[in-house]
Image (tube, rainbow, N blue to C red; front, side, top):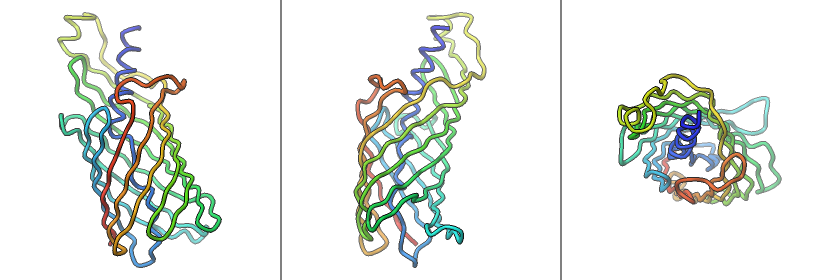
Length: 223
């Protein structure tokens, strides 16, 4: 059981390589409903993520819903990847101040020396900031919960640590908070530049293993 807990902590640490999202640029230009973006992140692993957004008008609400999907891979190991889909919706606005909610689900794969694994997770982020037509700055708070994890132990792990380790699905345990800020600028109405910085802690607000801070830079194109 102790070995499973150690592996679970490792999975939480490593899977956050694709955790950060660069979708908080609110597309309020009526001429563009689509946006493609590329993001590079310095985290427990260096990630490259390609994503697509689509803006939908909600006739029952005064705000637009932005749905997105993205796929990220680790530069060091292409077998470490994550597929994510979600929706972004402003839930409060007073002039240029907005509170924005980003709810998403994800599925990821991870290949390491001790095991290969897959995970399914759900996450929610709240952003509190000033959103102008061409720039924004917001403070963010995010929580991710791993729901299910599948482990397949390597021969090295069995020979070195635990010969009778069982492969299979395990209920997710724990989660992770991230607190930070994000900012962005739009040029010529079409081109977005986005920066975000976040500090991760465990679900019990303890120090987080792996990278002490996460940094992402994103480029987007509206059409």
